[in-house]
Amino acid sequence: MRTLILGIGNILWADEGFGVRAVEEFHARYETGPDVTVLDGGTQGLYLVQFVEACDQLLVFDAIDYGLEPATLRIVRDAEVPRFMGAKKMSLHQTGFQEVLSAADLLGRYPSRLALIGCQPLDLEDWGGPLTAPVAAAIEPALAAAAQTLTDWGVELRPRAGSAETFQRLLAHDLDHNAYERRLGGADEETRP
Image (cartoon, rainbow, N blue to C red):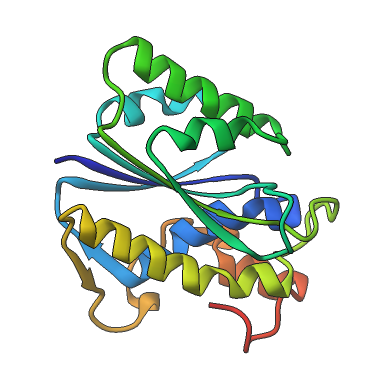
């Protein structure tokens, strides 16, 4: 089973970057086998079709407006996912990702398993700002939910040996979570995953 672990969102709009930061931290913590792809999908929209149609199992991290308390996580699965990706769109990437799922379905290459780990944002108006502290703190339980879902799907995860600083991060240079938010004075160290 080919598995895609995907984070989508825009790191330039505060909590809108939750999905990207969650997948980045997932990559920092876990090694996977060759049948697993870990991808920062950013705001690429339809450019992600090639990755989605190539997988059998798809796990997505994203900031989703569920109308809940800020930083609340909600996990939806399979047929429910497209409905939540389209409800209360917060940015163009969500419309784009809904189209990605539709295109994969039309091509007859829709994943057999699908899970969305969504986090209710607190702030989407802080252009260039970091994740808010509550949403940054939600990354830890999101990773636990992802690890459980992937284990249930039969995906083998291994904790990375040594420090996360000893290998190439998913986002290199000044865009990775630590460098970007340290420069901006983001969430306190105690709340950062």
